[in-house]
Length: 335
Ligand SMILES: NC(=O)c1ccc[n+]([C@@H]2O[C@H](COP(=O)([O-])OP(=O)(O)OC[C@H]3O[C@@H](n4cnc5c(N)ncnc54)[C@H](OP(=O)(O)O)[C@@H]3O)[C@@H](O)[C@H]2O)c1
Image (cartoon, helix red, strand yellow):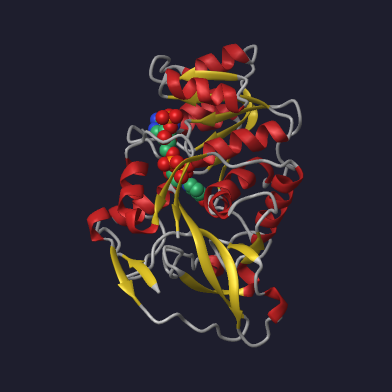
């Protein structure tokens, strides 16, 4: 089988392909023939060397993939052969709060999905929603689960129908957050960097779109659009917490997912205090959250947005395309 490898910080040119024997699943494990993998911002961080979690040397990169079970190890029902599956990014995190014991992650401290075959614990698998292709399913494990957690995973019970949600930009997390928030009955304000992307966000269901390049005071515009009140929730992916706290209502909720912006400034504690808001950093989500999200996707026949598909041999080009910042939707590699 062919497998990509890379070292943290080696950059896109550091990706190499090697051949190995197809591995044999051990007790409680399955062998998955990957059909598609998908890239998220985390994969660029791994290659840049600034990913927040440990990355082992010579790792098989990429956390997200989908494929078919082709062999099972001892203790796994052979009837599972042929099942279409995805795997959780944190394979040992089944349910409940995230803890240090759940830190091992695919495409980081564990080998990932940019490979023709992967051995995975059966306990980490999630069935592919029946209406999705392998390419669409491969987009779900990282950014979609994080978006679902951001909207539904807080102790307050998550977003309610009729509430206003701000999603930032048109990256993977934000497009899923937009689709899920609409599915859950919310009013969605999206921010983005161009008129072209604004049109596509409106087509995908955004109720309002703010161009943060031409409207740098986008929090002020969110307040105008909400009658001065502020949004109920902000899904923070840019790392611009101070701006998000100005956009959210008093005692609102900021789900702190990521920090793609290179212009983040230190947070003034007074802004946090005065907002009364809850800021909740989160790490993707548990397998229970992934299962719940997949059921919601299936019931609502929701389809992930794919920007472009690349062949396995062209994986470095897929990384370059994601790094261009010109994408709208997920970058997928067909295996
Ligand atoms: N905590 C977690 O569990 C978790 C899980 C997944 C991802 N993340 C993090 O979440 C972030 C997004 O990941 P992703 O995979 O969705 O990224 P992505 O697909 O690469 O999205 C990047 C997009 O962010 C938008 N953007 C850039 N600068 C912005 C700014 N100043 N304000 C608003 N939007 C901006 C751009 O869209 P426009 O051109 O439309 O503005 C860009 O296309 C990353 O920091 C990632 O590490 C965290």
